[in-house]
Image (cartoon, rainbow, N blue to C red; front, side):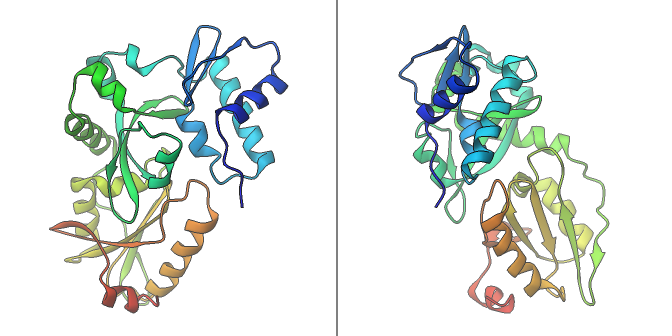
Length: 266
């Protein structure tokens, strides 16, 4: 079982690698203050959630060294106005248990224990928003999420996809290098374009981890192999989400029915 990292673990690692950094003690369990820079721990806690200790330590050191060298944005999101931040907002699907270490995280329940969060996108990463940011902005959660979805829709290419064929049926893989592949499941226009490209009234979708989305037609010959691989990937890949299988149709997103799950060998 992997160790659950908390703020003090991160501070200890930083003090060991960079004893020259002026780390200031604060009561905020989800931020570290180094000199005059307040750095959110939301992203790094998610990154190291399932990582072995040695890999987690390297990720933590790299993350903070990038920030301290100016490669990633630091500071407090609350210092930004909504007018300034709104063009950088994007939606993210996150594991529900992440709220255990971030209870004030802006969060809307999704399916299968997952949640929809909103991220402030930055070069090299993103920061998940917390409720106090909305209070500072005086903006409703629904408004922020709608803006985030609109931004990601605009970011994605909505041209017809090029499905790959099996012995029967077809599938499409989305593995964009932008940290929002799975989050595309939240986009009505994107998903409708994907469904139209596959030429089916409904399509099945898996999001085993943050950086991967796969969709296929009901008659796809490799559907049982896909279901098995999605389960393995959800257990073994970085940024895991779920092994649940979804349906997308003109009515939106839902979970597979029991009969559909059985047809996929589960």
